[in-house]
Every structure is written in structure tokens, then in C-alpha cells.
Amino acid sequence: MPRGRILDKEAISQSRKLSLLSNDTGRLIYTWLLAHLDREGRFSADPSIIKGNVFPRVKKMTLRKIDNCITEMAQVKLIILYNADGDRYLQFTKFKEYQTHLDREALSKIPTPNKENIINSGINPIKSDLVPLIQLNTIKLNTSEVNKNTYAEFVLMTPEEHQKLVTKYGDKNTKKFIEKLNNTKGANRKLKYDSDYFAILKWVVEAVIGEDKKKELEKDYKLGVQKEKEWKKTKKEEAYKHKPIPKKIKEQIHKVLNIPDRDKLNKLKEE
Image 1: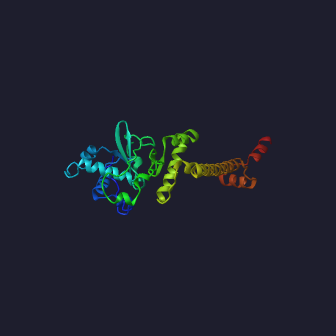
Image 2: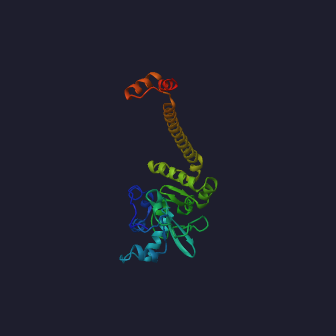
Image 3: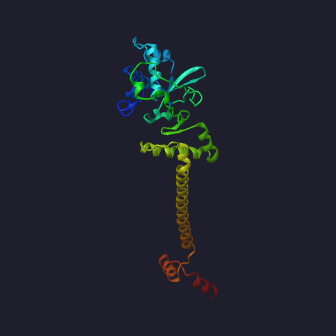
């Protein structure tokens, strides 16, 4: 886990959901928690663990305050609360949109939330004018991304979706698909897909395979050109090697080098 996280002004200062919290204590807990999240944006939702790790020296930060603020954050959909293996955990929503290089970190050891273990927080126990402004008890949690893992900095998929790609295209090609989509989304942060898996199926596969075929054709073309050059060079050398020397040039060479003509010598021998 890194020493800290990115505090994005859009995610913090301009956040509508953070402004809906009834007090600054909740906003403080939210921002301080960021530095303690794993690569999936998860941490324990146990107030005593949050107190011990995030606020060890802040005496006024009581367990009750933490518990109430965590519940309120879940109600405005800043986080997702869920139970797993007998413990309570939280996961920040849209965490991966504002963090970088998550794929370089160790895998999360905290269980993944799903539709069955998410806690419906209900009405916030803190008395405020927050509840009349929005119908918190009617908010439906978006669970489309809670059980997805990070396979690259900007690419999220469920383990099942990833395995489907590996089964169909192989591990090597799947890595190419993920890299292609990751580079595309990284270059354009506004580009978002409801499902990275279906984005890969829709255009990434064709793009990557097309690029591979193009590279293969270019490689074959260069190899063909090189072989043709080598062939021409060989033919030229062979032609030069076996081409007979014209008679006049041969006589001139013999005259210069004072080499007797073989035909004349043969005639003299016969005589």
C-alpha cells in the first residue's frame, strides 16, 4: 500500500455528495480515510480500527462519531458498506477514477462486496436537514462495479469476465487487449464505459488483432525485400564470376604481363 493517495479537487472540493454530509467531521473522516485505502478503495468499517489507524491522536474523534459519519457516507453513496467473513468493510465509490498506478500495488486482501453482502444503511441516525432534502431510504446502490478488480490503471473487470477473455483469446492476447484499452482511457480521462469487458469485445479485439496483422505483414514485406536484395546480389556476383573475359581484353592482359599466347605456343610445339 502506498504512503498516500491523490486528493483530486473535482472529487473533494467540487463533490456534491461531500457537500450533502451534515457536518465537517464526516468530510474529515472521508479525506483522511483515503490515505489508508488499498488498491480497490477498501478498508475496514469497524469504528475502532478506523480510530486506531486514521485518528490515533485525535481524542475528540469518538467511535460514535465515526460510526454515524460512516453510515451517512454510505447513504449519500460516497462509500459502500458491506459484511464479509464476520466483519464490516467499506469501499469508496469512483475511487479508481482519481487514483493512478493501482496495478503496481499488491492485490487487495479485503473481500469483494457483492449484491448479497451490501448493507442498506437506511435513514441516517444523525439529526440534520439532510434527510428531508433527499430520500435516503429510496437510494439504490449501484453494484455494477463493486465486484470488479483492477487489471490495469484504468481497466476494471470481474474475474469471470477476465477468465472468459483468457479462455477465448489466450493470456498473451488478453494482456494486449487490456493494455490497449488502458492506454486509450488514460489518454482520454473523459472516456468511460459501463463495461470494460464489452468495450474490449466491441472494438479492442479487432483493433489489436488488426495491428498485429499489420505488423506481421510489414515484417513479411521487409523480410521479402531483404531476401530479394540478397538474391540480386548473389546473382550479380555469380554472373560476374562466371562471365568469360573478352578475347581482345585477354590479349591486352597477356601483352602487359608478358604472358605468351597459349594458342601460339601449341602451334610452335606441333611444328
